[in-house]
Length: 193
Image (cartoon, rainbow, N blue to C red):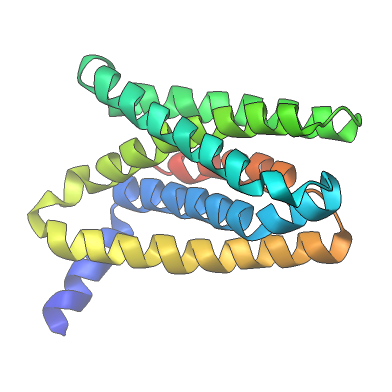
């Protein structure tokens, strides 16, 4: 227990590990919130629940495309360049999506396109953020990965639950609002690094 507490303290106090770990936690919250709200979005916003599976698959496919793009570029550009540019693109796309929806232009096609692009950027952010979070804690990699995983899933789950519950109470389109709010929070988290 003493060694574990020392390692946990080191990981929690190492700025890069903590900052990027928190950024992945926020990204996890975004994806969990999105997943939990999909049925409501397709039932109450688009009134087309039959398309949920197709749009879900297209957005997941966009995430896979993001992962493949990342594979092609990471060695050449580096994890920070790719993750920070992807996060910037995610914020811009999310802001455009929020404005588009608030103006009343949202359709199933625009949702699928903007959400797919956002999810592609998210895939490129999270894999690189996770790698960066591990850079300075490699000598305790197993414990660090486990603790960061707990932080990301438990913290992300709690944040996602709160955002989704609040959105349901307010009756707002959480797929747009949570992506925008979560992506800007990521910039704040990695600002610690």
